[in-house]
Image (cartoon, rainbow, N blue to C red; front, top):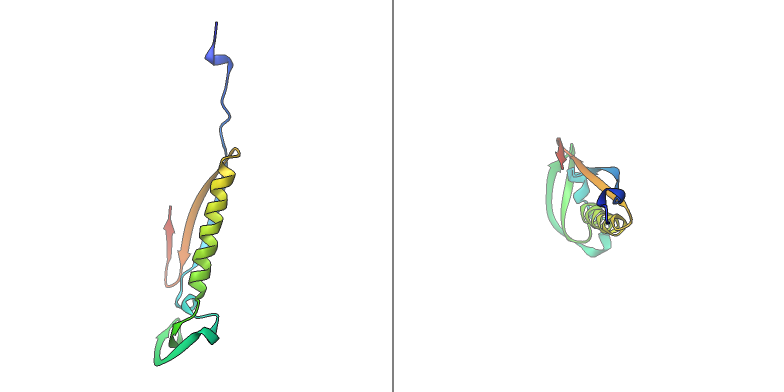
Length: 99
């Protein structure tokens, strides 16, 4: 007779991941100035004066792309007996925890 108590299922192994992400104003800086257009405007942020430009790729965009790729790779790995427990902490003017 079949006895389900004799069988067990594998529980995924938890793997905690903490992402500390910089969201300060300096992350809005374009990293490819050759693809930007100057607007002639400036702002004062993070204790510095910054020139406002249009176009280009910012550090924030690159960070977001990298986090998305990491999460996608975690999804693939979770199919292989690992459970990723991701916590995100952002910091800029203040720190925030995003669970």
